[in-house]
Amino acid sequence: MKNKAKIKIKTKLDNAHKGSGTSIVLVATAIIVATSSYFAMNNLDTVARFVSKVKISAMSLVKASEAPPAAGKKTDEPKGKKEEKSSSSKSPEKADAPVVKKSWTEEEIKAFAKLEDRKRELDEREAEMTRLEEELQQQKVMLEDKIKQLEKIRQNIGSVLKEKTVSDSEKVDRLVEFYSNMKPQNAAKVFEELNENLAVEVLTRIKKKNAADIMNLIKADKAQRLSEKFAGYRK
Image (cartoon, rainbow, N blue to C red):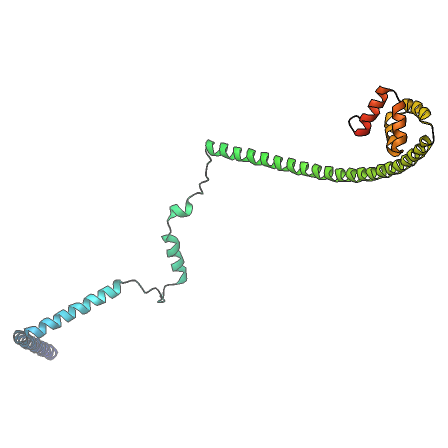
């Protein structure tokens, strides 16, 4: 019975303490609210500036939390995750897109064929020109050799003719001497049968008087032909 009475008394005391504590809290809260209201009524401008600063600070914090990290700033995100994000950010259509090969039109194919034919024709012409040039070079060498050979032949012929001319001249000189010592009648008979060119050559070298005597004794037609050759009017 005594114990039960003690418990009841203790419970009442605890309730009394709790009630008094609650009353104190309520009274303190009322005092703070009243003081704040009075301060706000007398300092409206100060309160408004303070509230705006609080709003600005809150908005800055929100923007900072939403903003992406700077380009040069390191993040704590693992490298593997970055690679996964970069690979996942790529469009699957671009990654898996097949390579499209260009298909040539019929006109383009014909144009290429014409160009190929033209190139082949030019190559053939170039080869032909090269062949002709080589042939011309060979013919030029052969022609130069022939010219050299002809020059040697001409020199040989010239030498032979010179020797023959000298020899003939010596022979004519001997004939001139021979006919000059003959009587005009006998010389005239020989001149009528003698080669006309040789007869003219001899007549040009003997004395004029002897030539005139011989020409007077030769037949008229023969004397006419010899006279024309002597003057250069007949060959």
